[in-house]
Image (cartoon, rainbow, N blue to C red; front, top):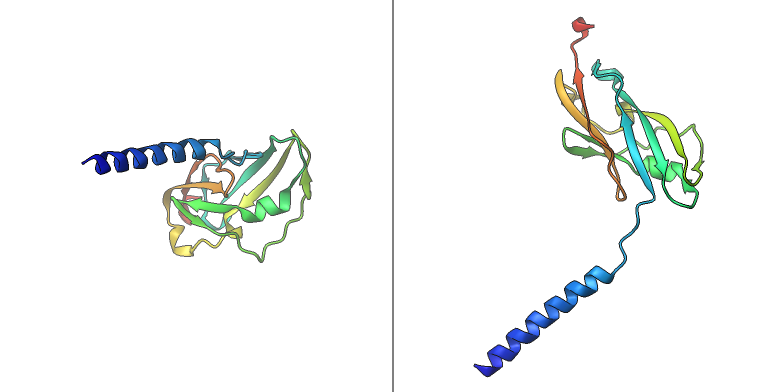
Length: 145
């Protein structure tokens, strides 16, 4: 019985110590934020786009191209990778404590056409560092426009 008590104590102690150690491991600090600006609410399926603001909240310059192509577009809760065939034609870096305004189109992502059905949808961007706000948009039928 005594061995069981000692063993239980050691297990509990090691779990507590591991939890404290885990809390001491520095987490990767967020260096940028991503904001989708949805001025338009209803689209045709082939014209869905949004303004994109990437905010550098760090003290160092960040590589915009690396960030931009690492984003996944989350469409109705499912992430889709960026299509590598699209080129970047903007600034290459964002200076510290500044932002970059650009735009995105869902055509730049590997979203199957069959998911672009008329009605209500949600979209956001995410990568390993951050996730944008979520926009609700509507796809209208061609005759609606």
